Image (tube, rainbow, N blue to C red; front, side, top):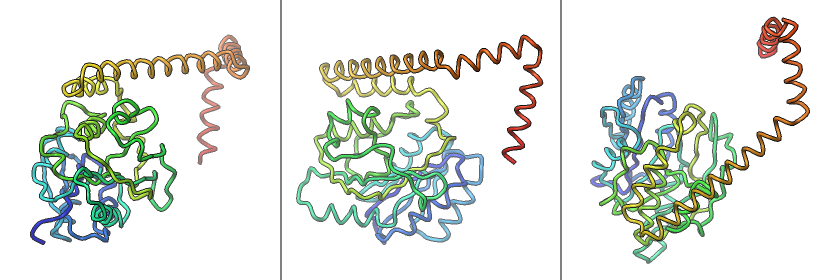
Length: 306
């Protein structure tokens, strides 16, 4: 194969335990004209050893090592050397359906419209294996695949996992992921490319599988600083009217969330179980048996688990 049709970019950082399954989903693709760029973002685990096994197994796998710089930096490293006409992003803890590339390419061949630059598939979620997948965390609708919806509704009514998309490589001629943004970088990407007045095709089949990983960055850190940095970046190409509308949309959204959680907290504090539990705790503490009672509870809980 002289030139791949699709470049699959897989950034990896200390998630070697998932890499085999991820790469197997690439190897199983029914469309074979691809290259798979595995970008090791300075991992301290066995990512390198695992990746090198796969480049020996199939010459279409390419391995790149770089100093740790974050997810955006790793994706940019992949984009720098990608040779394909199309780009498929895939995080190393996620997987693709075996027909993801073939069905996407087939759809592109059906259209005669130069503005169609993206094919978006539906997705499902999984914890241990895609064979036991769960419904998606949001319902994707092609009516959402436009600049306005992506800018104002992202994170409220929907988000699109990045590996749902197959992208025309030309979209990344002038775009690179912002390396000072550790999350929301996918939102910036979607808004930026749809700002070019492109169109998308939707395949309403779950061809991408998104792992619910409790150790992922988005589950462990405060997203607000990155959200602010993302908005600052978007301001570069938004009109003043668009930017003001975005700020007002986010303000209203977070205000409503704050009020909702305050009401829920107040309701919990005044509920009968909470009041009774608090009264019991105070009584046990006053009589000096709270500490031994807590130890007994922990022992019983551990015994029940075993």
